[in-house]
Image (cartoon, rainbow, N blue to C red; front, top):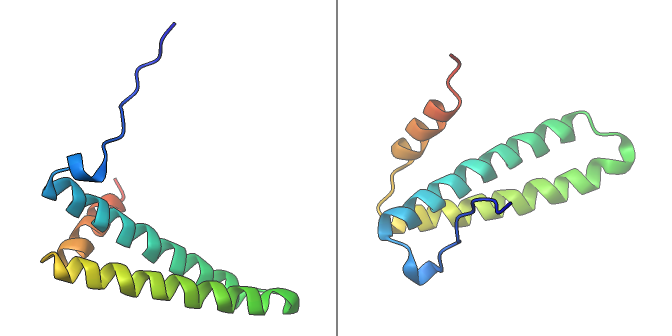
Length: 91
């Protein structure tokens, strides 16, 4: 009758480790969004070129912001890449 659910925590209730994990996940998702926008731009019809240019610029700005946040928290790009490859590993 009742489904199990997990209550979302407020930012103030999260541990530093949980915040770092969320930041890493955000970087990975944004990187995938940027890759997708770039691929879509390459195959875009004339009417959608401006849209994908805007999307690429906006996503790049978001990614730059998140990477700077990660650096401030002491998260290295190597750590993010290791997690990315582990998550996308075939097998």
